[in-house]
Length: 302
Image 1 (cartoon, rainbow, N blue to C red):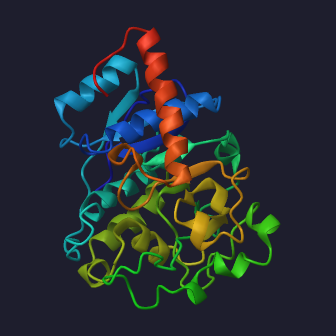
Image 2 (image 1 turned 180 degrees about the vertical axis):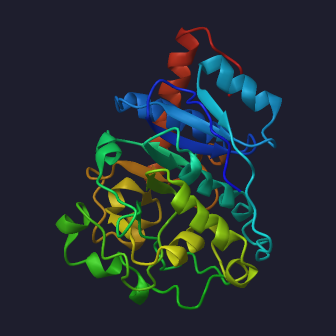
């Protein structure tokens, strides 16, 4: 079904977006939005929300003047049991930016990210509808926490980042070939030129139980399959999974990282006592956000 025409909710045809379906990730979103402004991005953030997002969450966004836009909650006709990773039920809706044709460029970010350096260059990255349909960073398939329910082929030898260990300078500039190893991207950051043609491919795939029942990682499994080898591999620095700081220490450089992704649990806002240095970065940004909001007389507990 082709989505109805919509108006932009901001005065820009290029936007950052992030998905919120509940308030669990709201602390992360507020830090993300603050970090984007701190990086002096020229582009606004739009929160994509579903009908499951609460009035309390809306009030927090409205109080801060954060733009928001309603989207439909997206689910396959039949999908895997994600009881081990319930977040994946929401992740299908992260495919909706492909339908937002009121914008010429959308860069989708997960709400558990923190921008450390300006990355506006993603707004002008060349894409097409052929061999450069969208851009993303590879998934790390090392399974560093040894989760028993992860696929057995998720091992370091199949990881695109392992292939870059001997070339850390190159790893800071580009990712390994999109087809390398398992050819799986991480869906936390997606650089998209919205297109109904592309969105139709996504919808046709999500309506195929023969496909979706085999997708271990929801949206990123679908994109990796439906557009195999047709996406642009970005450097890890744009989607620096926090676990990579130790499981791919050969390429990780703190000074190169532009965007940290706080994958897995606990999230920084759930564990103030974490010894993970990347969590310390998050808390430093969040304390600055809270101090700034206090100066503006904004104190709502978020």
